[in-house]
Image (cartoon, rainbow, N blue to C red; front, side, top):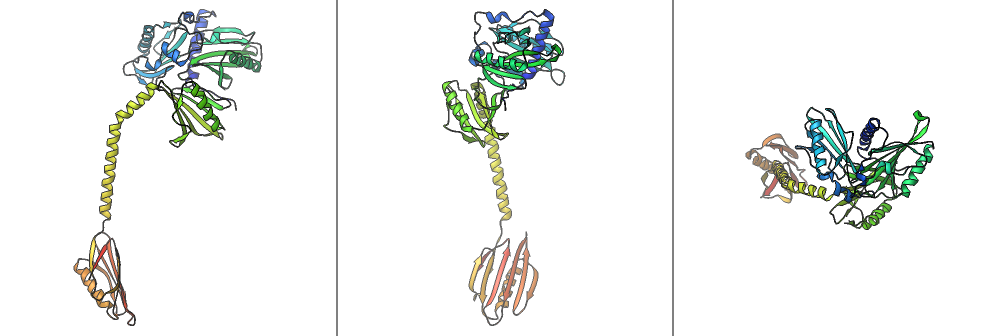
Length: 467
């Protein structure tokens, strides 16, 4: 099964970027309108790392509108939140915030009551901003997406491919070559320039270099006489998570940063990350995977106090499903702050629950508590055997009925209700009841030629025998 990679919200954002690019194309002609910021003195000449990109723009610390509610945890490369207001006000807030940080607004911004979109450039990076209404009037959703510092038009193209449109967010070409040959050509060109295959989905292949992703989509265009079209888009990612070789169902999302994949060899995955991350300054807090929430887990940390969590999360198509989750120092600090803040309430709730459980246990014990009943045995009782709820003893021949009459008197005098009475010379039974389900049963047998036996048993009563 081929590797598959998905970027959270990437499809939607690509469509928006392409729309914006096509507006530029049809409004201003096919001339390349790529931002000249890429040639500025402070531009990074190679695909940027996360650290390099964050120095230019860290969207996890970007100003938010008053009352904003992040829909996803803000990351270096993307920001998505809800805000109160109209589209134009929200768009202008983010526009001014970017301009204040030295970003240049590119041509063909579009702002209406229903939507706002624009691209901004600085030091070779391009940021895409969209604002749209959300739900009830007066609510909008705002998204900022850093497309990285690799221009789609600078990505390698197979020979004889002719440009259709080359802009800041996308580049499109067409060629007479067949689709399979074009796919192979693109892949070989990317790898030759240091890009690492990072999965594919359908007719799109994804490549990664540092914190930049490039997606190459190759497909047939029947409307153009069967020519093959090539489309390139790029995006910055918030965490440079290495992908093991020979895995399947590779999937990356940036909100929050996480890489998932399947494999049949768990040991190979542990070995890969232990060695690969060590060379990048990460140290494991354990020497093997241990169960955390019933999932085999291995945690890595670095000097920047960031964390990578490798976990075997289940089984997919008969293979181990793995997750590699990145957490920034800020995210961990915020998590710890919330835990510390919530600790007193959690402690109070736990103590209240324990107190309530203790109270209920005490009440149950009280309800289950049984009274103790003193039973005076005949002076000549022998072979006495006693438990909490039963007494057995013997008396002389012909004396059993008299002994039971004595016990009968004791229980009557103590307020017990006599429910059944059957006393004969050779055998008899007495049944008494009282209170909440308390029962006493007295039986005897007296054959006249063996010692007479008397048995007293109880329910919800404890006996205290005395002579």
